[in-house]
Image 1: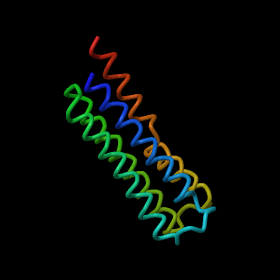
Image 2: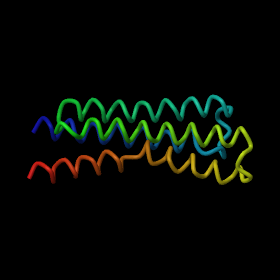
Image 3: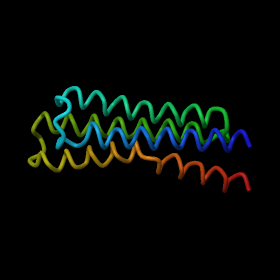
Length: 127
């Protein structure tokens, strides 16, 4: 019962982080913050989402779920950094394409889908 409560609390925290990331930090349409501040806030929201899942999977998981969780968020961070480097260097002709890729990976990372998917895989593996 305690694990279920912690699961739903973690899920709610991840949903709230994702909601705040999209609503307040946005994809450039909002003018609440400057570009640099928005980028820092995006990285922080991605980090807090990773940390929330990390704390849950560290306590209530199989031995393979925590490395999968860390690897997934490491891959997202590397892809976002790589897309940013390509955009700044001008090697890619379309700036909008790189921004779209970055937004996709960032929104995937701050959303609840990875947490739910890994939790479902973990429950299937237990059976």
